[in-house]
Image 1 (cartoon, rainbow, N blue to C red):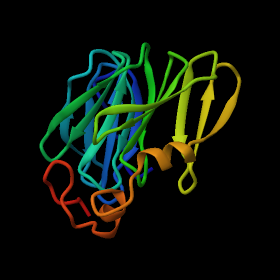
Image 2: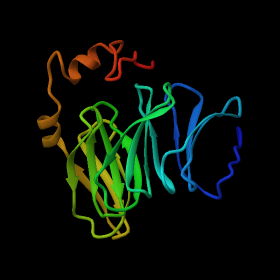
Image 3: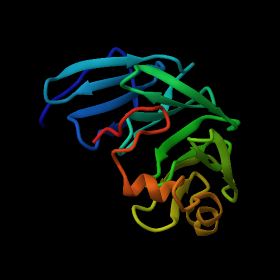
Length: 198
């Protein structure tokens, strides 16, 4: 064991590693999100805007962002450099179990007890797709690391694989103002006027 952190909350509901820094996020049952430096064993920051447990937590791979989802049916996108919540996404009708960023597209994936999986564009702050088919709580969902696929798992005793290639073609525009330019020029500023966190 490298290190151990102890919190005031009875339960830790979610965790996420930062891709480049020695950081880990821990989301707690009491609604607090903690940012730890695991090499220094230091609590760097606390974020407290959710009402109730926070189950889903995920760092963005390039931007200074993380996303959280809670029992308050809210998805929040945070800028850890600015130490604040940037905006809240609403649409789920029950607890949010997991949230994660796509590794390439400006998308967030969320899974909920409302039996749906949703894809959100965090730049436009819109829900761009609702995946239905599970008939019980959706406990987790994740993007494939390279293909246009999503996997989800539910208390309906099923694991489903979803193809979103049609959604990608419809929502990710190539060209100088689109994602292709951002990927070619990673030093460009992000949506919030900050340099990419490399």
